[in-house]
Image (cartoon, rainbow, N blue to C red):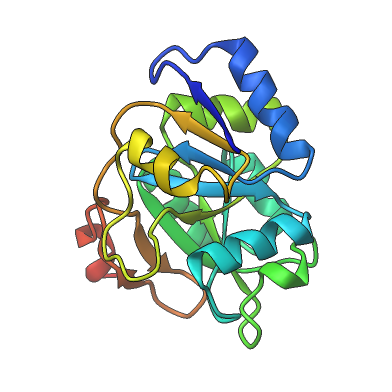
Length: 208
């Protein structure tokens, strides 16, 4: 049975944030809100938790997992960022974008695309997500909360509780979530390519 925390979406309660991070550090899988939609998250190097998320979402080994980071300074440890990519990241983060970048050796192999060795990178602007990342001190391994067979992310925390209470360790209720996942932009190749249009405006990347 999962725990259910109601955390204020603008002024997250420090006590609940600390408890949530303890669950993550203890190997837990958590549902938490971002500035696009709700996401599933776990500790970056926890193989068991990653596999639980993979089974829950029915993801194959070619799915690009995402590291949700606190700020730009965290990205350089996990992704290779050239000058042009850094400029794009600086201009469009924090925000509802996921950027696909070539990964460094710091990224666990289980999170990488098997052939391309790429990883998704996000910096959200949601206060709850940022509070979790600040307390955790490292990125969260994350995927959007889109259940198998669905096209849209789950948005109602009480519905999440009904469906997921035996599959995750914590559901954070930060109010109703968005109905679109983040916009995904590939920066791993020579020119940016929009791979998925979500709630982030794709226009700035289409003419580059």
